[in-house]
Length: 486
Image 1 (cartoon, one colour):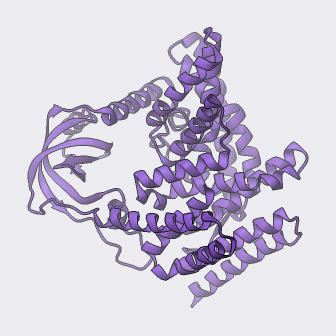
Image 2: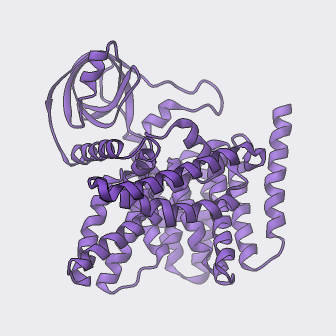
């Protein structure tokens, strides 16, 4: 199933770059199928054809039927509702199409009124439709393409807006539930701890100050603020223990977890890392219940393929790429970990593998990655997994009971204060971040190939893999420096 994922990636690249990109892979599969008479290679060719054809059809059908002359009408709030300073924004549904709605807030009374708007609300809007802005320079962020991959083709600049009704569905119910949980956390947690609670419980990072969030990003530990397998496994363990404590049988508890996991994924925002973690856990639990073994590689590959079929554009999402790149790197490197003895050494190599797996994605999307991330993850991963995440869940459960809430919350606040001080101190060190600029498509392919080569050499216990890694990125940084100079 893993090779089907590789075939899907090749299929998408063949459509979005050049069809000739597929030729070497297809020729290899045909030659191998003729030589070994195996149906697996023919299956891969079928997957490539399906993936490229399906993506081409999906992309071609992603267009707008709205008239640019539309100036007023009814819209329904569906996602990304935000009031920030004097700006109101939300994704709304107009005539079965998603549109990005923006409005400048003119008074405090209007702001108070707009803050009462919820998901599912129907508003009457008067304004003008505009196309999203195109990238004007090479390598500049292409906002129109970004919105198109979210199936949004228009921006509506509202002049007047009035709430006239409400139409609830499952999506708006869970979005409003997430808003209620965020309000619950901001009301009971302190200003310092509320952003961590919102991020680790419901996957909402909007409460973080930009400077602090950027600090975690530069150090290469920002993934710890996203809901991942760590949080899902902790959630499963907590629910399982509570159900057993209430006298439920193990079989019934397992069935309840299968029902709870999809609900938790929706509450946590249903982002790419959340769906990967919850999907993997769901399939593995289902396999245990049905008494058929499903390997983690097969589980993550099944979730990948299902995500692609649901929305092919998701393969371009940075969070999706990072989540799967790191997860696949760790799972495929298990033979390497088995040769390492000692807990500290294993943690170090897991951190190194995760950093190798994410480096190319970080370079492509953010033009930099953390050189110190390997070492810093050794500190931050135990800090979050053993202390902060369990404390956040404990505080979330006890927030309504002041007597029991006070001490755990004080402990959480002190630990977060110490964590942020460490983060600020590490940022002072210039060697923590490697900035290279955005690499080109073929450079990315070369870096991916060299990263795979490093893993192969490493698995064969070849001593030169570390030298190769240093040479690749040092030579790349020199070439970028020379190109910037010229």
